[in-house]
Each structure stands twice: as structure tokens, then as C-alpha cells.
Image 1 (tube, rainbow, N blue to C red):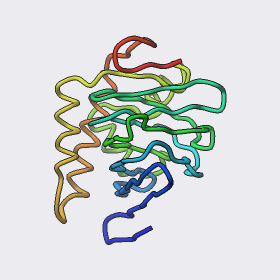
Image 2 (image 1 turned 90 degrees about the horizontal axis):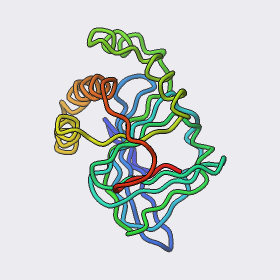
Image 3 (image 1 turned 90 degrees about the vertical axis):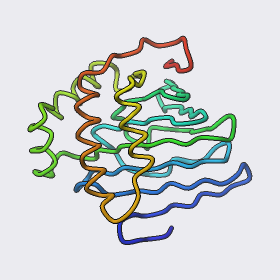
Length: 193
């Protein structure tokens, strides 16, 4: 683990390859993680619970098995939204040993600035969490052109102003997500079992 001024870099290594997860705190309890993986599998560890997690696949493929038997996989351009306790993810894999993506992790809603900013763009975080719960705590959406553009801008962010830029992109993303189209399980490049 390497601690820098604006991020924490986790370096992963096992018999199946290597990976890097770079975590940027965006608000109190809200992080943006850049995932660069060239390995088959890794243990999720104990990240604790999260109100809402949004995972986007830029390249490759990512799979996860939950303790209750459900599974999901995402491929290029797919997004998985869930609010499960990471302790409930038993296994994560990148079956083609290649995955690049972004994970937005909202651990709690106690940051007044964050909640106020969401409300200013018409997003009710608690309603978004309830929607996820109604959908069984995990569901998939296909990235629209607009959402794909937001993620591309996140991937390209550089320099000292990155935190402020990530805040703007997070607001855009949560606004777009609140209006997003859900994909029913199965078919295409993604699945939810």
C-alpha cells in the first residue's frame, strides 16, 4: 500500500498476476477507485458495507459471486449497481486476466456537502438506494453515450485539480444514473444470475 497526497494505491499480486487499485477520496465516505487488473482472481478483503456501489467496465471483464449465490459479470461499457456488504462477495475474477474499470463507492450519506450537492442536481441518494434495494440489491445497466463520456473523462483526469474534477463527474454520474435504464438479467455481454 502506497499513500500519496490525494490517493492510496493498493498493489495486488498473486500466482494469477498483478493489479493496481488507486483510491481517491472524493467526499467523506465517498471514494472513486481506478482498477487496473492483469490477474485472474483476487480476494475482495474486508472493505465494509456501502450504501451504493457503481462499477464501470472500460476494458476486459469482471465477475463476482455473492454469498447468497447470486453472480454478476460485466464487460466493456457495462455498469453494475449494488449496495451489498463487500464481505458478502465471496470471489472476484477477471477471466481473461484483463480488466480496467472505475468503482464509485458511497459508504454513507453523512457528508452534508455531498448530499447538498446531489440535491442541487435533483438526486435523492436515499431514493436511489431504495431503488437498488427494490431491484434485489444488485442490477445492471448499459452505459448510454453520455455516461460513457463521463467515465472517459474520469479515466483521463490528471493533475492537482483531480479531486474537484472527480466531484463534478460524480454529480453528473449520479444524476445520469438516477435517470438510467435497467437491463434485465441475461443476454448481451453482461448477466445477473
